[in-house]
Amino acid sequence: MQLSLQNFSSLMEGMASAVQGAASSLVDLTVGSVLRAILEANASVALWLQWLIVEVLAGTRLATSSGVDCDSFGADFGFMRLPAVAASGQVTFSRFSATGAAMVPVGASVATTGNSQSFIVVGDASNAAYNAATGGYVIMAGVSAVNATVVANTAGTSGNVLPGMISLISAAMPGIDTVTNENILTGGVDAESDVAFKARFGNYLGSLSRATNVAIGAAIDAIQQGLSYSVTENYNQASAVQMGHFVVTVDDGTGSPPVTLLQTVQQAVNAIRPVGTSFAVQGPVVVLANVSVTLATATGANHAAAITAVAAAFESYIASLPIGAALSYTKLAQLAYEASSAVVNLSGLALNNGTTDLVPPLFGVVRGGVMTVS
Image (tube, rainbow, N blue to C red):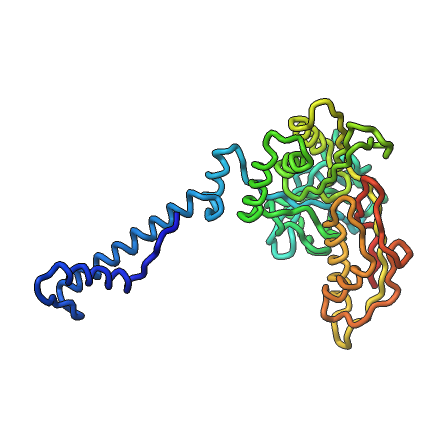
């Protein structure tokens, strides 16, 4: 339906013409006249009614809806907006005296300088210092520091803080004096935008009742934001040809997605897979990217700040690479120059001790290794 919108002037002209056409003599519509005031009042009401109509029309179509109208439209189809994802990463707790044992308890809170973003310590079974029985990370006597996993209290990109930003311990910990993050925290994603919601809704409708790559992708996309995946047909996990079998490789940006996520993907894919086929869901084969470079900065520039900015740019870019994507050697130089205006030249730029692109194998993904920026 195409609505022909009118402004105040056109409404007044139309009403004035109608009144004059119905009168047998000339009517007074000069400024200040009673009849003109009545027509102006009616035109104002008509503008308001026109606005209400436009709002109703906008809210009845997904293409013109926004915010909660998008959510209510999708809800009629069982389609929901993906929530924000909390950032996570490693922080280092240190102490000045290492004479006795100490512990960083799960649930402890740390924050950035200025207390603008807070993080909670969570358990990590892959960390040798974590003790599930005691509920924390143990620092043995003679050891001055321990790494612990934290998750942002507030989900979203605001949790993707740069190295060195976390410096506050919210509550006293016996035997623990300082905290910092040596690397950028990653994985924080804002709630799905209206644009992304509408695009995914189209893919969702297009995948219904179809056992295709698009359907599998739509099922994975509906689990959470920040996932990358690949679907490899007619191969098994050993990279051998197996007709009728496909492998779904999923990553959440860490290179090591949790078992619970892989199980969720398994269930989602199983619900729409073609009958008579078999499949497997796995995490990616991680290829570490070790980058080294020496920066030349402008006279008087803050060299340390440039190092931090360039290292953060490298880490952020590499963490965003999807499964199967190659890491371009020359892209690293571009990132270095774009990260800080203080950088005037580069020397010794090496990617895994070489100067060629890093291409992952089948089921592979490139993730950040050792970053040496000086």
